[in-house]
Length: 226
Image 1 (cartoon, rainbow, N blue to C red):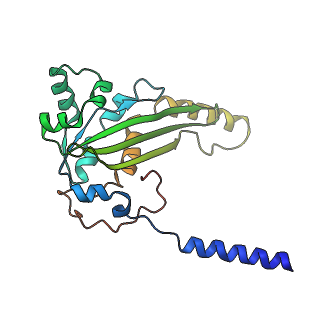
Image 2 (tube, one colour):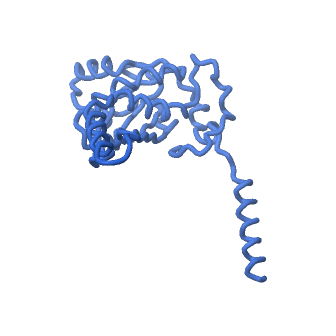
Image 3 (cartoon, rainbow, N blue to C red):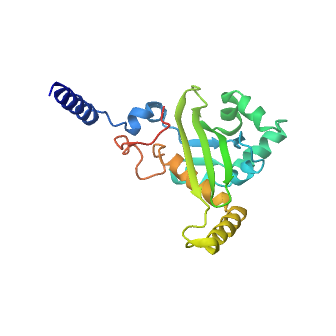
């Protein structure tokens, strides 16, 4: 009986603490973004830390549009890269080491988007395969060097053959479908999925109808806000 009462007490305590848990809003997570209110963001080429040498090229095409749709003026990645090459900066690592003030000096950008590709992995296991894309990104002010926003987005896509029936024929079909899907996977499409999840947490910019109206929107159970 005593153990039963203790168990009930623990359960009630957990329920109360769960109900009292604070829901993080965009204003809670990214106060600096609402304080500085950047209007323009310079998107640097991504830093590829994955094992796939082509990941950077896949991902570069997915950055500008969702950021612009979030309500910001976005400096095109290719244009930024070309101008920096004219200034003698040819490597992404060099760009990431540059003083933030230089980006304001060269482009008049209010903030810079840094992106790191942490994973771009295809897992192939004969009967099943999957693609995992994991991105870390942060927006930093060119004026105060403060971090305005940071988030991590990961998406895992099943490239397997689904339900192909039982028996040897079904297993063979599953192997073939998994191999074909892996070979033909549209990596850019999946990068778009990861990016849309990632950038959905950014407070709306000045060219969006939700500008300064989204501070109370909860981030829910999304991970990565800091």
